[in-house]
Length: 204
Image (cartoon, one colour):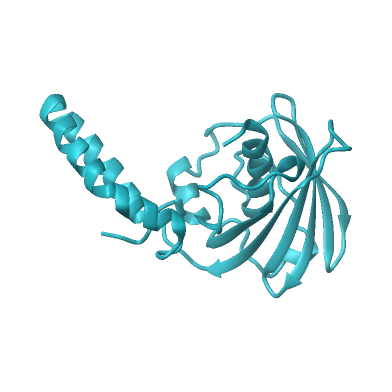
């Protein structure tokens, strides 16, 4: 993924799912009926930064399990901190505007518009590039998920999963070769990685 796309997505996901550590995220009114710190969200990318298309791995949408992300990061007061700041500059029942400022990653303004119940459109504009086209994504709350789920996943029949399944025999073959070279400890790491790939598409 291009760096600008990654930064825009990071800002959008942080605002949407409260994943950034040690940042006091104000919850806008239009999202007050959604558990922003847990559950599964579907993210669909409409437009990348500068009007570009979303990268292949993001095309068609992806699922983010915030419960699993929170468990992986560890909900500890002494956990990793962030210098990012978030300010809610508009807080209506159908539209909210938030500014996300990070000393090391730039600043952006995210406009959240309600599309339907628990479904929103987010427009992310980089503040240091006001003339550039914004990133646009849609997000919908899909319900609860567990700490043991994959943090990021895709719909089982999505193009990403079809391609991943087609590549799985080669990945498994390479994994066996890596296991033979790496020994038991290294082999366990390879097997965990394969299991994570399968879990992303709901496969065993």
